[in-house]
Length: 475
Image (cartoon, rainbow, N blue to C red; front, side):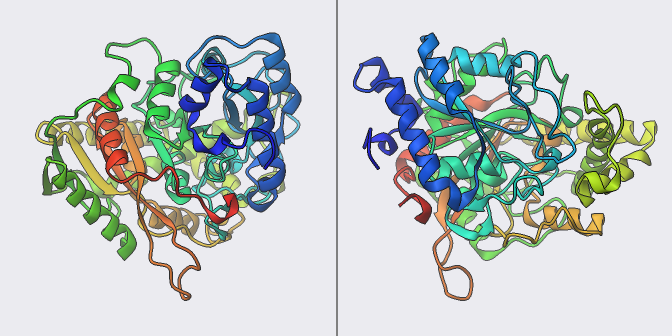
């Protein structure tokens, strides 16, 4: 690579510090990011909408003096409303929707932080998958093994960070769409507490309150600092100050129990056990115990809320004024909407009450334990095509989704903050995978307590660093 040769040696705060000290310019950083899109994107299909001129103009017009001034940044093609730029939602039906008239509040805050937006990343259709294989743009591939999924729906974002196009990228999470792709691609993914980041003015809340926007990142401190820049008003100290603060002696529980009873593969179990031992070695009190929750209700409650919201989303094209015909969207999207048409008002209220009940059950658990550890995913990233939104059997589709990722949706329903960290590696054997794949562990804190997650995550990052591990595509 020509240009700024040390680009990949820094996280986003590190790059911003170089800009602040005038050791590199925002233009040089943008050129380095664009060069990596041109060199590496063909292998993974992460960036689907280059906005290079937009980025250059933002720099020329003058960047705010925020914590990430001059750092290149990518928006997901779902949410992240940018004035004058379209959002296709990963869908052929919405590909001709008019561009947003104004930035969303979240994007305004990203810009005020000094980030230089220069493209959009791939997403599955309407965010209804934990893989990223839309008919509109084609699949995003895992940078560690391009025959496997990158995760979804923020799979383009995670692959772009994984191959070091950018050190962090915009993402969103309604049932694991930050944490699953971060786990697949070996990076950091935090789902913040419900409503920590605003969705104004284009949405009151996503998926009935299950969805939240944030990012996937290379480092824990970038995740914390970005949340400082984007979160709404609320009590508490800045989160960046927590990344590196002494967590004290935490009470940590760990469990491999999947709420839906899905089996957990050996790689994920080993990663969980190693993470628990590492926490104990660092002085925390660690105990294998799971919360007493109504696990069997987790997936049904999610599907009720998600399918009903899909009905509304499918009818939200701003100019067509009608929902799509069956052949205008992917099979699972249409079929999930059909399931939603059968949801009654009473069904929706019962599902909401279930989410509240699960939240209270977890609050009772956190009266004793500060943090809960679970596997991030139950399996390694499956091969492309296995979680297929063109399947005819919508029930089998959703069974496969939650066979792969049974632990993430749990905390969308409860609203708690949860972060995944790439602390382990899979076994590489010719029968399984040609290269070691990242294997992550999920850390969950009580509602509103991202601070504890950042303290613990930074401690673990220091004890078992992952920053310099790069996938084959980035070599």
